[in-house]
Length: 176
Image (cartoon, rainbow, N blue to C red):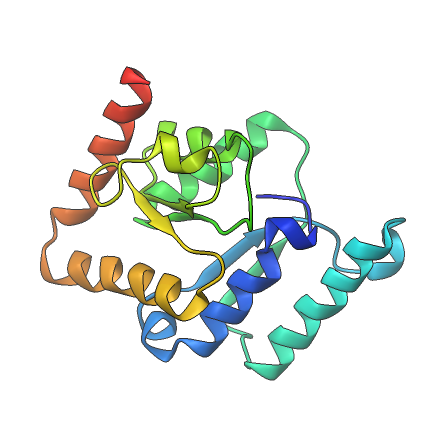
């Protein structure tokens, strides 16, 4: 859940997912952000990111494994999106090149979502890596997507793993 700005690296996440066959075999990807039509944006950077998103969808043939939801401004609806993903035992990924604070990280963790977030900025202080969530390096997509795949593989083998990380994330937010 973010603007489609270069610094938010949402298209980077889509590319990581597209390239990682193991991750694609484990989970689908849902993106919430931006517009579908680049002409609806008034920002050149966002327009370029929208076009890049469409290019990646085509290049990696993501239809059937990928859902793109237009950016939401209703905070109640956002909460429902987080909870829906949690109900399906999904995870939240915040792949920003840099994030000063990380409100979406706090929101996701507060909804019980295991969270993967940039190790550049505020989220690195919120998450205890490997305990209450996971740090990812936005400059290393292969490593980051492998870390996400490892989590979901572990969840397949150990049915309690998702709940353990979810509970630890909630506890961390309550302590924080």
